Length: 94
Image (cartoon, rainbow, N blue to C red; front, side, top):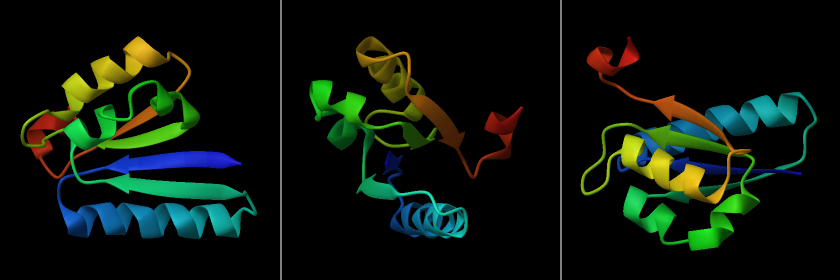
């Protein structure tokens, strides 16, 4: 089973990513479970439990703790988690 986390401070984008991932996983017959988090701080609060996730969709631009800082914290726990950065800001895409 794929355990997937989505971390984005904007509800609309969190739900949009969740629905797109869900459609993809169902279409491909892959068992999955998705958890969503409204902030990097909330996600990092999981501590060592972060390792349960195979894939994390991570917004780059968030209040309090941005996605780059969250990714650094994730790497302190595991190098095997796939991190997918998502953003609505063009300047981050390059």
